Length: 163
Image 1 (cartoon, rainbow, N blue to C red):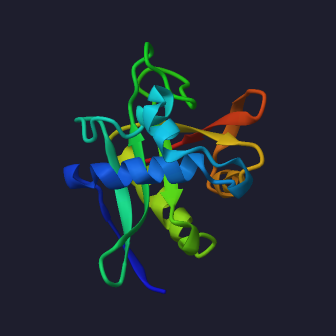
Image 2: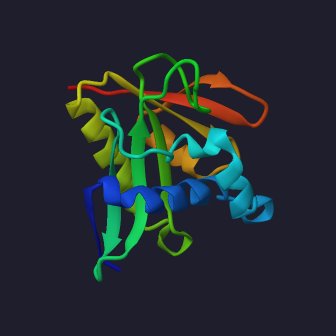
């Protein structure tokens, strides 16, 4: 199955909302209703109001042009932090891939491209939050993310972006 990566734009806002819900519902035994996710400001801050000047990201599209995954970052303010907040000015990353496309390299390609965008924008670090049981944690570790804080069931991870 072929796919390509393109830059995310304003028109991708609704797809990012869909992917934030996909990322939150990564485990089939712990699904939250989409309406509950859409009403949760801590979840929706990753997509609401896309695309602000400091936002950037990428979309994976299949060979017919349908969006299949996204990886993007936002620089969230200290007074409205996300789950992976580490410091002002450090962007927080979100990654979501449609289930049928998982474990095929799409997530890794998206992650690498989004980190490249952040580095090219002058960011020295990028952060994220991942539940410990999430298989994506292995991907993040393999791409240079390290745990900097731990909660009850999730870790905050940071990657240094080299120029």
